[in-house]
Length: 442
Image 1 (cartoon, rainbow, N blue to C red):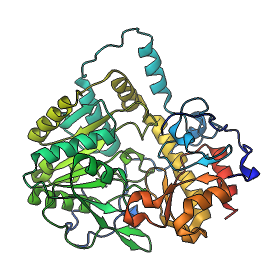
Image 2 (cartoon, helix red, strand yellow):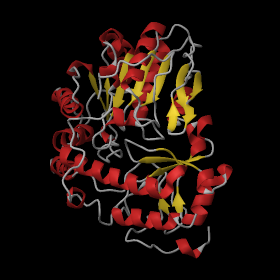
Image 3 (cartoon, helix red, strand yellow):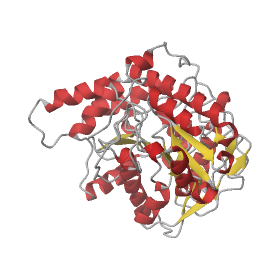
């Protein structure tokens, strides 16, 4: 791209140069997965509000944490900024926030770094209680600390190891893994890596986004994978649907894996259904929830995650799988970041969610019918390329050429993503202003 419109930096956010690095739960019993579960991702989720959360945190909270100021990532080896095709391009494709993280995390890392011993670190059992306390305080649900496995790897690796555990524990090696489309492209990639066949089930488009697959799930199946909240649309599955899926998985001898890395990013006033707690107690043995502080607190560069595994036998098998790859619970930096984030990051997160909700409102108002689903969680906007006036087959390149905005190609999210784009709007206020100005070029 040689258009000199993008050779300048029209906001105080320098381009990273010479980068060489790689890139209300429990209220709705709902029908099961074999029937229409009612509104799914893309429907109006106002019916599932969180009455315990203040929908309007105090004014100025975002400014207190620097969300409205320029934020420079120059020299940090940012994978997101490595995707920028030229100086001045704003990368909006990768799910990584261009916002300063919690001060408590930075302070905790600095304190730990001052002690010059960085050897093997045991798992702190108090970390399990900390996770359980977080779910109780943040989501109003009870998680048994015994369910918690504290993993020294990111959620993607955790899911790969879980799929390996599923593969070795499945009698029918041809039973596929099921997941919807469009959906995070990592599911397909990880199934291939684990040697597991998979089947993508189309979500049904509706005027307000997507509805869940309308036919009974096929059998046999070894697992059902779901991003909850949905990635790429940033919307929320209903509790009744999750509960129905858990019941189906238990009856089918399959495992429901709910990837909830965006779950703490539900916007103010919304509730996040935690899969292991929405499931009937009789079905919890067939459910695993994966989560992490990485997306929530903008610290994915320090890989960590946890798995909520109610079934003791499955926990033991997953622990054995981890050990087979030289991984054990704990981790020096992982535990340092997790303790600080969960223990002290609440006020920062409240301010972040208010900032994201305001950014969402500005963008959805500007883009109107091009928005396939108004997001109620996270910071991802799922767009119809044709409604933007872009060619569906080359929308990403066209948006880059016309506006200097880099997006994720919808084709990366499976067959159901063709003709779509995903934009990340977790941006500082001045950068969002520039994005809105550039969108006028469409």
